[in-house]
Length: 161
Image (cartoon, rainbow, N blue to C red):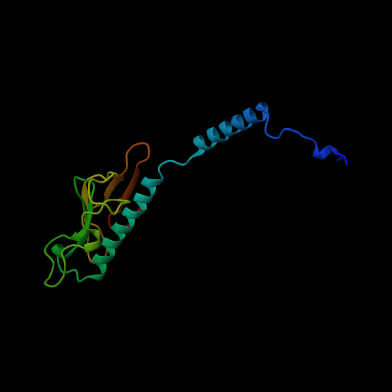
């Protein structure tokens, strides 16, 4: 008995033509070029800026909630030569208290790793009194051009921007 072949059961080759493959490669190339141009840059520096602002605000909070009796009791933030920062007192700590906040000693931005740090910060320091006022207006620059960000601590108010 002979079998009857229907049109959809014929022996056709399956696969893609060369033209279809080339078109897919061209479309993927155009798509990747568009994504590359629009890909955001400076995200690490922006996250580092937010982290540093939190650390400055934390130092300000420590100054306002601890007993401020003199300038040595002021809390602040110090940025070292190797771009690490420390939240600490301006002077010696009272008995039973650490001179620096343990979680913020020689800390790198965006990293739990020890120095050297990958994101640079300008060297400097700022300390706050019991009212949260800084010793002086201070600006720290985080990152390098063109992705650098400035963190400014305003005089009198201590506003961190």
